[in-house]
Amino acid sequence: MENKENSSTDPGSGNSNAKLSSDAKHLIKHSRSFFSELLDILTDTDRETTIEMVKKDISFKGHNAWILIFSIFVASIGLNVSSPAVVIGAMLISPLMGPIVGVGLSVAINDIDTLKRSLINLAVMVVLSVLTAYLYFLISPIEQETPELVARTYPTILDVLVAIFGGLALIVAKTKKGTIASVIMGVAIATALMPPLCTVGYGLAIANWEYAGGALYLFAINSVFIALSTFVVAKILGFPLVRYANSKRRRNTARLASLLAVLVMIPSIFLFINLLREQVFVTRTREFVENQIDFPGAEVVKFAQDYKTKFVDVYLIGRPVPQSQIQDWVEEIKSLDELQDVNLRIHQGTDQSSEMAERLSSEVRAGILEDLYVRNQQVVEDKDARIQLLENELLRYRAAGIPFEAISREAQINYTNLEQISYSNNIVTDFSRIDTIPTFNVKWDNSLPRNARQREMEKLRDWLQVRLSLDTLAVQSLN
Image 1 (cartoon, one colour):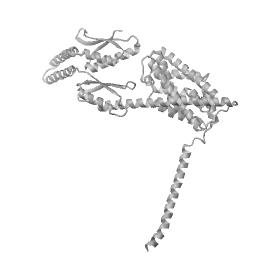
Image 2: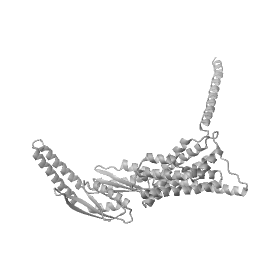
Image 3: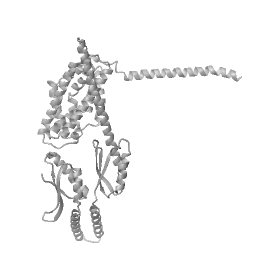
Image 4: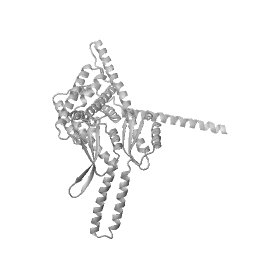
């Protein structure tokens, strides 16, 4: 009986399994078909028209040259006043992409003539842009650097990623039948080729070679990866190679194009890896300082990272941290992945006079508040006068207790362009009261530009106020 039941159920079970298997195969087939149609760019690619459009956008003559000049002026103004909206508007009208895309496409299709035109026009574009920005910042009355300018002085891994995916979006948009103008404009904004060139002009105008070199480096990285993305997409889409009547020239051209592609790709890969490591170093060290450098009564006021030297400097104020705790931090950071060669240096002050002064001041104020309810208005005014007198005395006390030797050593570490520092108390009066103002006189390296010297002065004054817990002090330059 059982054998009959088994024999009667087996065919049905087999049919069910066969149906499930058939349905699964059908679903997989439809899924493949769906994703194939979704991601297919070969069908709608117009190769001949794309090549003609790229060649047309390479030249920088006449209208294109004037459009470039005007857009550089607009971008420079936007950077000068730190207006992202103005910078974006300038990038919308700038014709910077043409020669860069031309380089990538010409290498991909072995077109040596187009490659020459692209490189020449790329050089013209860079020189014209930098010269225009240089002239603007040379005559601009606003010399102060802005966040928009500083942000374009050195590349990060994010800039590389934006250039890669922006370049891919650009060439894919250009290969589609019917140009997608909004995509091309969006790529022009995202890859931000124009602001770095403007920043190069700014660096030259203020004689800051570090700014100029860093901005030019950022522009070069963006350009290389946009051209590289164009090369890769053109190869994937099977753009036809340029045919030459002379077979020897065809072979030589193909070899030259391949050599250029290798010369661009290999340094680009190393550059990408190095920037990625630098970004990991910066992120991990910042996380370590924020999460691990913690001690009761001490506070981190500043920390600096240097990827090249692998130094991380942390500056603390408040209660002194024992050397044993500092050693624990040093060993802990070396135990983290990718930070084994990091040198952690802790800088801290030992002046406790500000804490005492604050405590005395609060006690005096508490005594005064107790009398407010039992004294008349005249008594309150007398108390205010006493408060002012005591605060002046406290200021003198704190000024007298300034640890000048420790301050000078820390200032030498923080400000490498500082050549000399001196300290004195200046007694100042407006003929109604007398104040004692702690005054620091500093001398800077004469090669330091005036704008940079002013910025260093402001940073030094802010640091001294925090370091010494002083409400009032003066910093004067001797040069």
